[in-house]
Picture 1 (cartoon, rainbow, N blue to C red):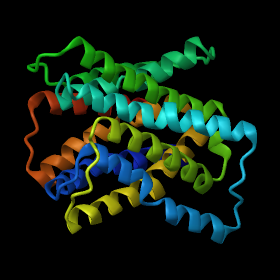
Picture 2 (cartoon, rainbow, N blue to C red; picture 1 turned 120 degrees about the vertical axis):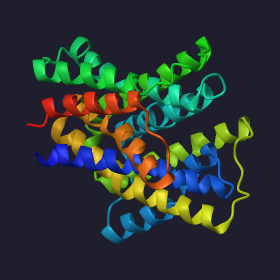
Picture 3 (cartoon, rainbow, N blue to C red; picture 1 turned 90 degrees about the vertical axis):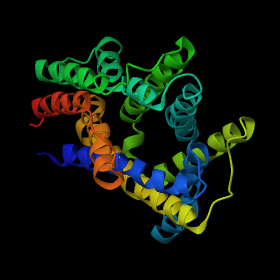
Picture 4 (tube, rainbow, N blue to C red; picture 1 turned 30 degrees about the horizontal axis):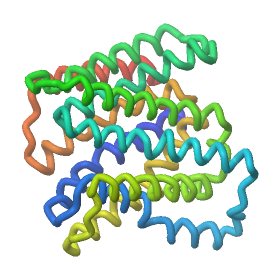
Length: 282
């Protein structure tokens, strides 16, 4: 397995286990919006110190500033905000499933916008991954058109993140510097959203704060840089496809650590995703 694919799978694994930590933090008073803000904000001082210790300049060119602002706002904050807005209309499970339309959107956008040649194994993989993801959906819940649209838009905006970090050249920037500015923009945008919808609450016990710190470190110092490296080595298409391992890890870790039930549809969906991932293993 190539280094890039390993980075992407490790990133998906970390993103996949984070919901388990999140569930424990919710027991201590956290909520999804607050946790997303803290995930971005808590490691900002650490990233700043790492940049200073490494002698890396915080200065950005005008082009870099524009590109990072676009990436952080449209590719970082917007998908999260849209996904949370969709929770008011449809179930969390259905919304998360619809969000994972982004591997298909990523491949199609690269093919039709950038005229990237689509290899048969890649096409087969993205089709299988998309089918597998939708097999996770809770089809018994009544879907609202607004909620479905918001969840799909969250996936479209996240596909922008995957494609733009590859096409803009930002993936070649020092990962600490890029991550610092990404987290800064995401924390500001999420805080504004949380204040508008009254979704920010810091009435959390020590356990919740500690878990939020762990999540922030896992995402900021490991999952995000690994994903950035994977995009640099493998490109946006492969990043989108291999990211589909994330919901499989989430379901498995939920069953292992939280005692959550795994349904037959989820097992079948995981098997289909696994087959899709195997198509692009080499």
